[in-house]
Length: 251
Image: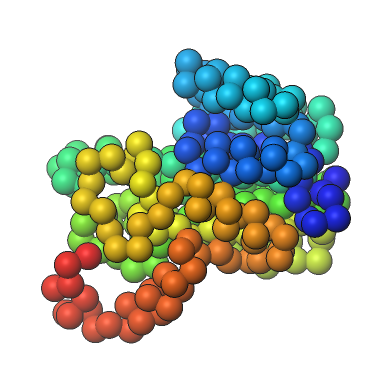
């Protein structure tokens, strides 16, 4: 069960090598979290992530999980929940893709959509059902500010995040009053391995800053978290910029 401050004692990470997820796990372990399950494709990186968190004092195990194999999600995640209650599920997997390449090779674009949206829908629904059955818990979904409005530079990735964001909001509404809390996190440009080599956008942030915002959101039982918070104001303005003008902005 969560502690008096709304922080989880047990955590399931879907996307166990995500830098944001690991920063969040480290922060929560420093508070109250003692049980962590890292779900992802088996790899040395996943095992290193688990070892890092074990060194902080948590009971950590890895779970073989593939976002692109939704037919396995119910079985794989069901086994995790069968071991005991999970206070928080952090849905953190996703791929950025390569916009120029993916436009030329549609199957690459489809893979981005299947990972970021289709796989996430499946994993979120399975997790939400399990959380509802146990009567409590939080589902935290890593969306992106890229899903707020299509940009020429990354509309394939952005469209997948837009779908995930709307889905997660609807799921939160569907679960309202059940004891399950859904929180959508919308970071801006995050300095990480995934964005290495890309031109940095204004109001860039870090995995650690996103983790801090997630902890605060859990304490407040927020439904939407922007990182940094000023992005809420920026995107509110950008949503209303005429399309012809928006097309010419250096975004």
